[in-house]
Amino acid sequence: MAMIKVLDTELELDLLDADELEKVDAALQAVEEDARQDPALSQADNLRKQVGAVRKAFDTIFGEGTGLRVVGEKNHLGVALTAFAQLTDAVQTQRAEFERSLSSIKAKYSPNRAQRRAAAKK
Image (cartoon, rainbow, N blue to C red; front, top):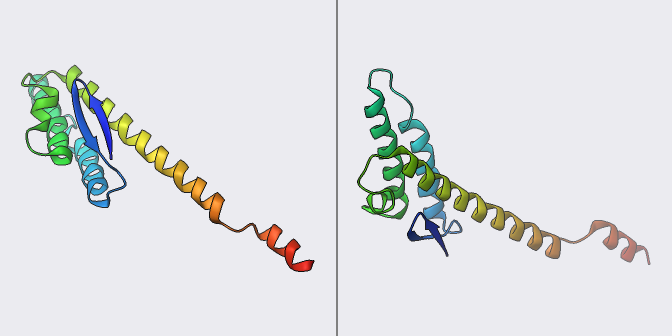
């Protein structure tokens, strides 16, 4: 489990937990879909919709009320995008760490076929 800091809020994020990883993937996908511009809405309403999508993602991942705590009450797209960028950076960092760890374990415990053959010929 790792602590991440998004704006001024510390949150726990553990992508080695399958349930949490599933929530993160679903929330990030939902932001993509929910934050699309709607030509039927005014520009201000589209901003509100996009900020709401970011808040909803934080609520989905970290629990109800987290989006409001992180992003705040204002519908400021700049704040919401900064928070979302910090979240996605943390997700990418944890995924990269996992991949490095997995590669290291595979390299350590995977037998080297060439070495086995050479040893067998002796």
